[in-house]
Length: 183
Image: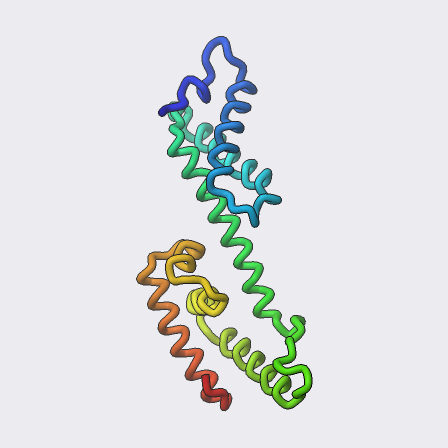
């Protein structure tokens, strides 16, 4: 279904009416792809998607026909970009992990808690030493993301992500063994 008549500016329709219809259609597309965990950011995502469509129309005024599939794709890419930003912030938090409190392994066993804290520091230090792409892939893997999820979040092909995880984990193990930590 093409939305040319609804989103185009016919002689009798005001530009505002076309934008409201576009906004409503983009909101529907966004509602179908936005997970509940990002519901609080949905208005922001809608604004980003609207801006993308408006910019496209400025660059290519003859591109008046906006299909439902196109609007869905715009909503989906806005969502993926937001997920990438969220995960990038998580990575920063991991890199600045000294601020995060370490949960004790066994409340009554201080020796074991100290050992766990030492291992956590070693893992953070070794992750810092990895190339950025490997660090991103390994971090998502260690957070429990599947290969497919990590590839999608990072916008990479699955094979590239798999190679980066494999090589990154190998480098992480080597680094940890030089620090006396056996994975």
